[in-house]
Image (cartoon, rainbow, N blue to C red; front, top):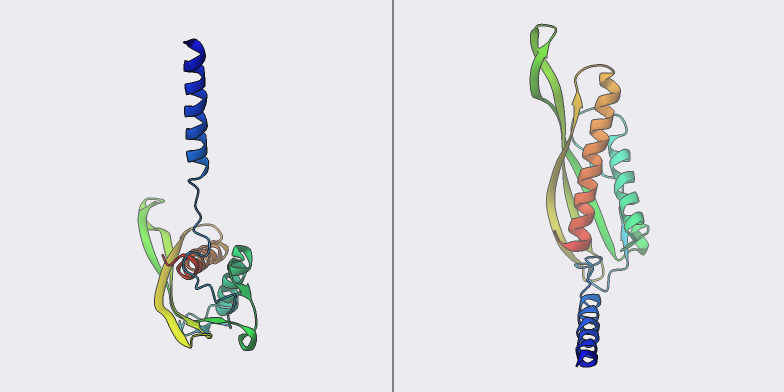
Length: 174
């Protein structure tokens, strides 16, 4: 009797283990059409009127690095690629988000950098536009100390968030 309970327990445990181990999935490449293997990402235009030095270069380089790190689509030049991601930086806004008491007077203590971009994702193989979307994200910084350095970090945070959003839109249709 004890022996049969032991056998049933082993069979049940084996079945559960097999079931659990077969239930894995991945989002990688979930929405990338199978015929697309490479992508070109030319330098984004900057129409933000922000006069922020190197904004378009920093943005484009971060987006390219995200695709290199993800490895779903290989980065290639436009003439040799299956797809194209091109875009325009539409705006960079710097606005107050928090007011606090600084040395007895009310003052802005936190500012927010918000960047808006327009992205077009094209399929060169099928000669169609997959999507045309606007993306927006932000980075916050304290309005004290080395404001210039803090502002640059906030810009980089906004770029990092938007480029991650673009990558996810391309590879997983989110």
